Amino acid sequence: MPAPHRKQPDASPAPLQPAADPARLKESLTRLFEIYREISAKADEVIATRCPYKDARSRCTANFSCRNQFFTKDRAARPVCAGSDKLDYRSAWDI
Image 1 (spheres, one colour):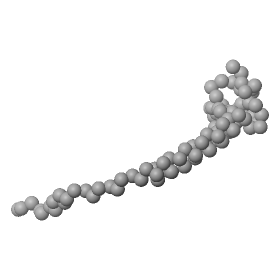
Image 2 (image 1 turned 180 degrees about the horizontal axis):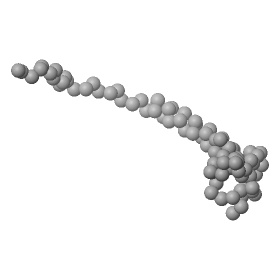
Image 3 (image 1 turned 90 degrees about the vertical axis):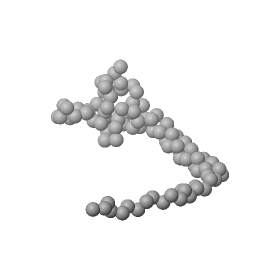
Image 4 (image 1 turned 90 degrees about the horizontal axis):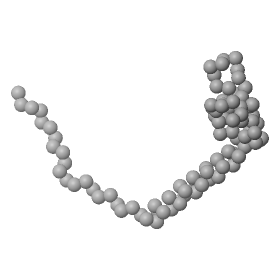
């Protein structure tokens, strides 16, 4: 029995991509850098008062003792961060 007929791939070359527009590329990169600058500025503002060891669920991820750690009944769970984000947290660290 003969093999089924298979369609041969098109031998024509792939269409050329248009050249990148340098002005649009520069505009896009400038906007991207502005976005990152805004993110960085906000992070710098927040880190001045928010403990870097406090996760999004207010759990303490520090591997050292801190006076702001509140342990729940579940001793295997990470402690809750009881510190205020309006205070300078660094004095609470026991290092």
